[in-house]
Image 1 (spheres, rainbow, N blue to C red):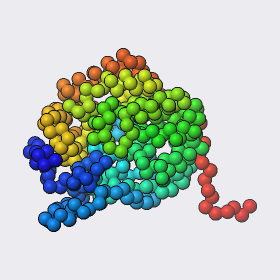
Image 2: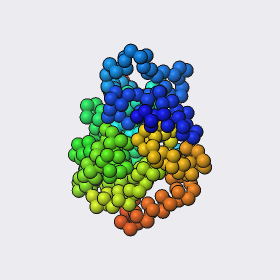
Image 3: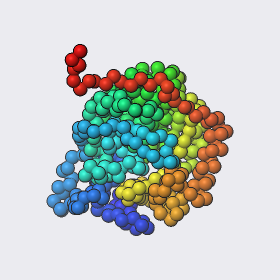
Image 4: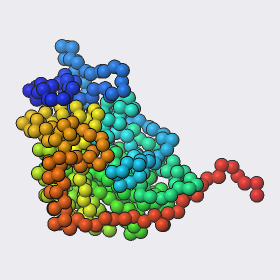
Amino acid sequence: MGHAAQSVTEMKGARLDAGAIVEAERRRGRGALSKRSGRFEKETREETDDGWGSLESLEALKTNFHVEKPRTIITRNDSPDISFDRSINPYRGCEHGCVYCFARPTHAYMGFSPGLDFETEIFVKEGAAQRLERELSAPGYVPKTIAIGTNTDPYQPAEKIHRVMRSILEALSRANHPVGIVTKSALVLRDLDLLAPMAAKGLAKVAISVTTLDRKLARLMEPRAATPELRLETIEKLSAAGVPTAVMTAPIIPSINDDEIERILTRAHAAGAREAGYVLLRLPLELRDLFTEWLVANFPDRARRALALVRSTRDGKLYDSAFGARMKGEGPYAWMIGRRFEVAAARLGFTEKTRLRTDLFEPPLRTPKQLSLF
């Protein structure tokens, strides 16, 4: 780690400090390397060895859960480059630890680090299903597909214990409300008893994110997510149960997994996926430095080229938030990725575009504020 950590500070445009990297034994099984403070904090904190060996005695990082009681559960957006206008995130933070996750910077709003805190300090949205039913029953509510898993994974390990996603899905099922799910987890199969009947009515579809077929690379990039083979098996079982299934090759990372596009699509189509999509690597805010230090530590021979290719798609920057460009990028490299994806998808037969129904929606019964006199 020493040589790689030192070379972190040499990367063009990166404001990094190799001393902020947490010891490998303490972060074993985690994605990020450091936990420097978020952008809103007035003070910056990091662990420093005082020469007495105190850091060696520190325990491995554990996952902590925090109860959150949201005032609203449906998040709205009017972004022109996103196919949905509403979403639900059952959890804040994600224990999967995907080092490239564009949602990491949101943890700064909670006073935590977008680095290791994002995957160890998890917020559980208690009472989400009850809040959802109140919002669905609001006068004037017009149903459209609710996207779940667009920020953090609804089937991350916390779901095994807290079952927030399960309760949300039950509420949507009762109301005959359409839902689209994105996940990396095989835990989604637990809810086939809900998803299959909903899919039969045209109310549900699932996208499985497959970033690589290389088990070792997957372990580095997304240490607590399902293995690539298990994700492909999940696609197969969802499809066999009649649930419209898509594969997301996202993100595509230059020089790391960009050579796997065709192989991933081929395997996913064989497993039963009939829709496909991709997103080019996005590095907003703190994620720029977090991803750079991970890249240098694990792929020092490819780091410079990978970052140079990212810049070539973002007008010389590591990130461009402009609508339309933020997902796919611009320039020759981005164009090549897009054409490779399109050609492979067309050749394999990824032509379906599942449209979910909204005409079956039945608003939950509103609980009266007081009893009627008659």
